[in-house]
Image 1 (cartoon, rainbow, N blue to C red):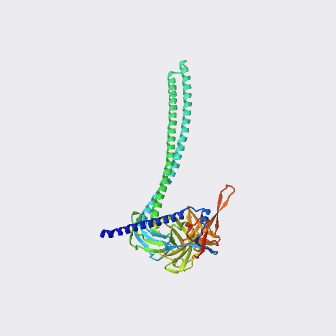
Image 2 (cartoon, rainbow, N blue to C red):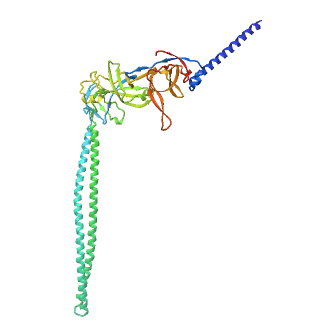
Image 3 (cartoon, rainbow, N blue to C red):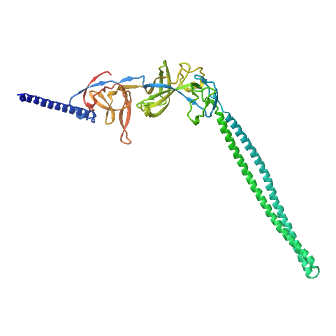
Length: 496
């Protein structure tokens, strides 16, 4: 009996399971058909009209804005100092002078810090003395050139004198030779005694020796001249060496003087002290030898920069002509106006792939902002600190696009087929597929231009021409995936 009761229950379970399976299959097939229709290519007008039924659709009319339309983006903004510098020391020594404190104003070139470094003072004096000594050495070397040149000239003259001695010695030799020959003939004829002939022979040999001596003297004089010529060249080289030593000495003086100049730390611009970390009497370390704490930190106060991070979607629309309106939490009753001065043109991965945009603001003591920053800076004679402080936080509205005459449609009216954008325009109960190019969209509304093809007689191809919507069109609001180009529809106008 129990088995008889369980059998109908099994049949019920089996029937229920089969019903649920069939229902799930029907839902899947219906969903797949809808998905296929939404992404399918547009059906032909003939196939659509052949159905013989008008599909009900909702249409809207565009919103005309003849006074123009502006797209913008609002993001958080914070104020940064236009310039901020940590003042460190290039030399070591005792802090001798420091009168500025937090909040004090500073001027460009004003001496803010003095460091006592007597060793550098002595080193400068030593280098200057070495430079003076080098210059005196140069003077001595230049004077030595004159001496060597005079000796060289004298040695050259001595060569000429020695060559003249050769001529005299040769002449004497010729005379003694002729004399010897005459007495030799006389001796052979017994007209002269032999002793006289010996004397003449001795005189001839003496003259021959004098010729040799004169020639040797010329060689000696030539060697002397060559020596003094070499000394003259060496003297010129010595002068060049002395000049080079002077250049080295001057460089040494300049180097040490530069270090000595570092004992006075000056302000690089007009600004204000925002941090002071040392007092007079303390020993200052050379910042290049290790990590040290800045002595002073100063910021430029006449200009500040407002920093905003623009999301990736809007980054291509930002330019240096983009207007900006800034409102800070601490100054809620004041709007600051400016233009984008610089942008990074880079999507920073460390900032969610946003692009850094900067707007410079004149930091006046009142709430008035200049129309053009450059002109105001030329004539700016403000007294007292400005109202803008680095670190202030607020929001910036950045103008992205401006349209003189805008025709707005809902974003849902724009759809894609085959990677191109379209809208459906309903005319005389017929849906016409219109290709468009998206010019602006903010997730709610959009501005598009319809693409029209004009024939080109030159190449036989059509040319694309953009044309704005008139604003009188009846545009299908949704459900475009079920509609084909040229299909009959039953349009019902609605508001948006």
